[in-house]
Every structure is written in structure tokens, then in C-alpha cells.
Length: 223
Image (cartoon, rainbow, N blue to C red; front, side):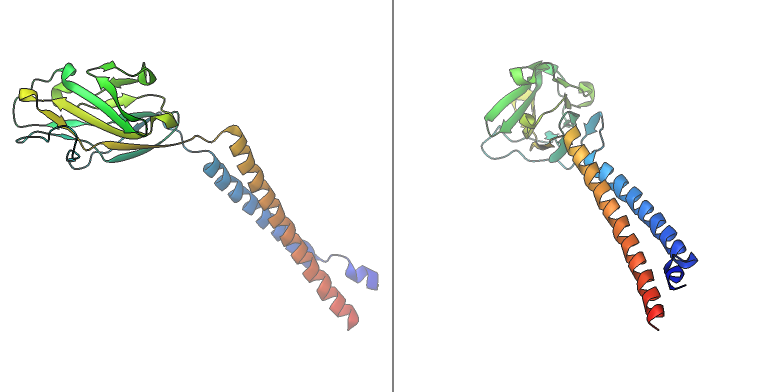
């Protein structure tokens, strides 16, 4: 009879069922969270938001004169492999000749200053077939699109326009920060860690319930 009293009761089975159900839900939540963290959302194109006009850094091209200036957002972050649009807008109260050959894009990086676009033509081999003017020039939109970015594209991108009397209008630059895309190995490791954590949580919960039940039975037998 003592041996039969040690067998799992309905209360024990109920506790085991609820524990397993809770562990399963915990496993599902952890797996979803780990999958989201390990797999960054991919977007085909990143569009920067426009901020207030930036002034030209000292030592660079002449500052905007009169009511004319070039407007750029200050920074952007992106994932390797994405396409990025760098907005740039020419603001002027005078009648500017909107010609493609007047547009310039430069990048300042640890390797120095490089010309990205001269008009709508690439200068550096590193940007060949990957960059082009994508804005409506007639509306003062000098925006540039850079495709399939890599970590080597990090830097400060300047938009410039050759205005009346050869005055160069230039924005304050857009700093591009790039992070590498997580590969299959990183995603697999993240998923594996999530599964292990969930299984350990379920096991600990079951052991705790079983030990509690057996402790109560032993106390009853001792009495």
C-alpha cells in the first residue's frame, strides 16, 4: 500500500501537464525571439529622411551664398547588401540652370576623399555600375542611389552643385554606417541556443514539480 501511495496522483499528473504546456509556450516564444534577432529584416531599399540644412565644413568648398544651399540628412545606417538612397535637395530663390553635369557626389573615408559621381558618370572603379542620380533634377532633387552596398562603402557622402558664377554649393554630408548581414551559421547558432534554453527551462520545471510531489508523499509516509 505504501508503494501504491507513491505512484503519481491526479494532482501530480495535472502539475506535469501544466508544466509541460508552460514549457512548450516558453520554447515557442524564445524560438520566435531568437529567430527575429538572428534574421534582420531585409528591405530592398533604404530611404533617408531629410533634416535641416547642413553648413559646409571649414576648409572645403565655398559656403552657399544668398538664399541658395544644398540640404542633406546627417546620417544613415544600413545592412550590407542593401540599396541606399541619399537624398539631396537644392534650395534656391534664383533661377538655377538644372544641368546634370553640375552635380557632384564625393565620399570622405579613411582612404581619403573620392569622387563618387561627376554628373551622372562614375569616376572610381569601386562604384562602377552601382551608383546613379535618382532624383528629379528639374525639381532640385539631386539624390543619389548606391546599390548593393558593402562595408567598404562606409564614409561621409557629400552632395555638391555648381551654381551661378561657378559657386559651389555643398551639403554638410551624410554619414553612412554599415553592418554586416548575419550568415547562415550565425542564424543556426542563434536558433540552437534558443532551443537549448527552452529545453533546459522545461526540464527544470518538470524536475521541480516532481521533487515537490515526492517530498509531499514522503512527508505523508513519515507521519
